[in-house]
Image (cartoon, rainbow, N blue to C red; front, side, top):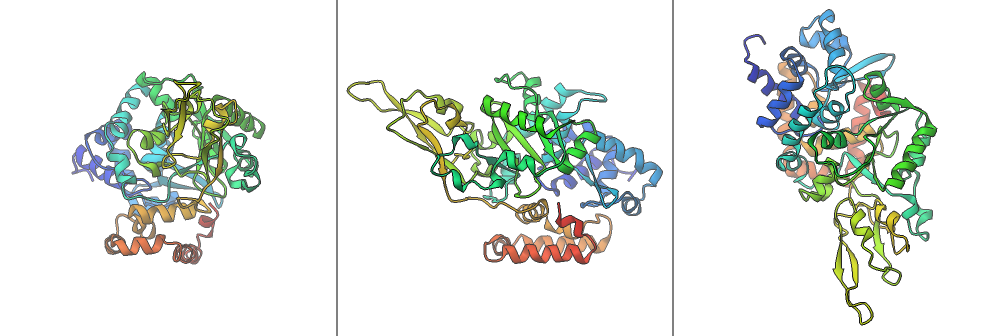
Length: 437
């Protein structure tokens, strides 16, 4: 690739990242990020790497890089969060990081090596918050598979509804089913800290990871290992601070729980700033008001992380200046932060119909996300260099762009059968371990 100019290789890198788990539209802000974070040699490697998890030996075969070249390059990329390495089947498997959850988060979580956090914060802000192009690329088509989902604060659930809370919606239960934990800097809060726009005094060290994700963070110095007891203590602290629990959008073996505030969180900004209500999957609850006990104090409106509660005039003869909260259920996450702040118990969580898709596992989420983003062909034919894979990616990609195809595969009627076929395919390729993610 030596004949390529610097802009050429970074443009190819941008195209590669755009074809991963999150669409990443090209613009000058993205070019600035890539040029800042990747050397040209690192960019060449990531462009040539397979789209899927691969051994270092396979990467060497497909890219033309020698093992001696690859070892330090991959180690450096993993240390910067630009490549993810996972330990599976007694070996490391490598995959390029998407923009989210990946490049942005891991860059702003870095605590060792050369750190230019203020500049990085400015670059990411220009790209992610300068306009809505990133959110539009990922959310404008009404996608049903979000990266993360809100967990309800159990203390805010209406007592008559409590028996219906399932374990996969309980933060504490999700912690108890995992075996390793890490905590690191919240990337969003750290970004806003360096931008000078942070309004809260929430600790920076609040990003928690579980299982294989915790392994990755600990191994590459993005977080420190904590015990299960410390993990539970962190949940208690965040509940007291009125933070939203946004977790990995899967039922089993979640990889993270974010502790989000409305002044810093980029995911919540997708809802409150840019109007994409599908930016975070709601819990199976929503807030409801008991007007008889509400005193109109406005604490719930102030606490709501999506600005989904507004105070409106409700005068009476006795209280001519009385106000009452009105809940916009279209942006209500069902997180229960409002209920935690209500001293009278006038606002609480009640059941609602699930609006989005909750995959069972990371494998299912990856497949369904690829269908919605139009990148399934990259998972199926992941070698970027061979003509046969290029042809099949083009053929399958064109087929997947047909609206009826996507709609059919994502429908309740066909989704389970489609996922079963994908699992069988992984087993036939000797990759049954993928299904367990």
